[in-house]
Amino acid sequence: MSTGYRGPHALSNRGWLDFVARLERREEIALVRSLTSGNSRALDVGGGTGELTHAVAVQLGGCTAVEPHTDRATRLRETGIEILPGSAEELPFDDGTFDVVLANWILPYVTDLEASVREIGRVADLSHPEAKVVFIGGAPDNELVALLNETCVPVAGEPPDDQGYLLAVAEEVLGRQGFSRFDLYRTEAALHFPEADLDDRVRAAARTLVNFWYEEHPAAPEMLTAVEPALRRHFARRPHAVGDQGVVLVARPGPA
Picture 1: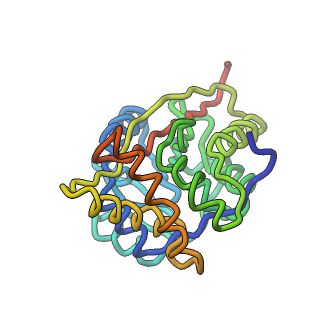
Picture 2: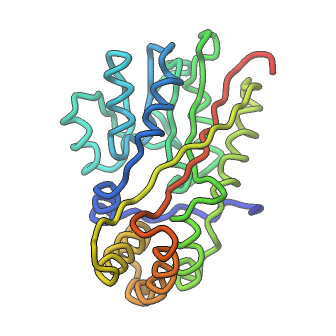
């Protein structure tokens, strides 16, 4: 496991939209709805695609989201969700404002990892009987992260991505804030590539993967070349999808 935070990944709007268009995450949505069924005041830190935020809003009759990216905030507002500007490092709320705080797939993109987790814990109402914080991050066998670590990260000259480290830090920080019960769950999500022709499929997947983190990187063309052979090997065993397997960390206050 890593011994320090590698720093935030870049995330371009075009790369993000392509990624979202191919992503299927029904199991994640079902689990989040189940986890929040007893809550009433929900915050989603980083609304992202809006799918999870919308599902929670429909179930609870409302949901607040903090989204620092203007383009994504516009998409979220179209669903009727209350959106506020801000970042995980500095949430615009008083202590204990929400009885559930969702932080799904955001830790790889924060500037200050520990400060972000502290803020997320700060705005949670630990007195509520259903109080909880929910993080989703990459599982150890996440196929998307493995492909990027194998091919693109070395070209970029960056440390490998370690999603497990992020969740371990989250548990440690929240443990100092009164959270003492921690549960882990697994989810399956995937990027789908229905292209019938293998060459077309490999090229499409290469663009999606590289653009997700490295669209504006000067070495992006080199990364496309590097990732294509790995994708051919991957599609030989899983022909039309790249897994985005997740681990869900649920933190609750009270006796362990």
